[in-house]
Image (cartoon, rainbow, N blue to C red; front, side, top):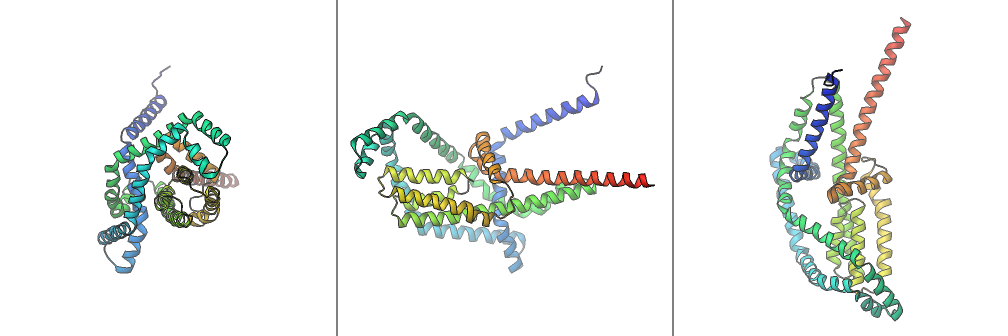
Amino acid sequence: MNLLDKNTLRILFTVLTTVALLTFIWMARKPLLAFLFAMLFAYMLDPLITLLQKWTHLSRGLAIAVVYVAMLAVLLTVGLAIGPRVLEEGRHLSQAAPELYTRVASGSIAFQVGKARGWSEATQASLQQFIVAHRNDVLAAISAQSSNLTAIAGNALWLLLIPILAIFFLSEKSRFARSIEGLLDNQRSRRLLTDIMTDLDEMLSHFVRAQLYLAAISGIVYIAALSLMRVPFALALGTLGGLLEFIPFIGPLVAGTLILAVSFGFNYAHLALLLLFLVIWRGLQDYLVSPRVLGQRVEVHPLAAIFGVLAGGEIAGVVGIYFAVPVMAAARILWSHWHRRHTDGRDKLASAREVAGEL
């Protein structure tokens, strides 16, 4: 028996190609991620550019330039208006962080908080023992988050490339799509690819804009509520809470935990009221605001989305968490089109057989 027959060679070639592709993706993960985020950034700006072209009849390139200049002007205006205060609160928070870290590590924070709230000495001692018993877990979590922030800062160059790369996606989007379609000769396959790309384009565009809206809404609500409740570092924590809204499910949980931890560490007197606000806002955001903003375009069941987010976090960290929902939505679109084509082909074959039998 010939082990190297045609089927064996085909399977071997497929396996080797897959391994080579996965190896390439892993080795080139940083530029690939920069291209992915640039694509999402382009999806965020594309509606503004299209609307500007419709209103002013400018060329595509000039409309892109106008939107970029306007966006830069808005960022500078907002930065000059609230940037100094956010930076000042962030500086104070970073200066206080080492002392807070020491108090948590030693457990002495239990006595400080307990005295401010009138707790008994037994309660303070029990809390101090609990903190010390779980100190390694807490410090490991803090160290892990610090490492993540350091890694993000180290990749700042790739972040700066995102808006530059987005210009090419914005200007060459239609030409790139036509080039991909031109690779197929079969008219039916080309039509299928066009339908898939159209659905993916609509889903990604809607997802990116929805995440932007949700982040803006959360940031405004956090800043307003925390300021009214006089939470320490309200502006910095509210801004961070809005930014973390970009990370589905996990981001809001991290934001709420961080707000409570900082408030607890700096002896905020109304922790119960703050916790109540966070719970109510999370419910409103998840069950009222988010469904209305996201609509039915993404069409990923909440349970499946949670599983995808957790799996994405295990596979690729924060990046995996962020891309989990759009990847699952894209997989649903691909499966839907493949299943529809397979079903249509089977129905046509059955109809042809019926006609042949009647003849």
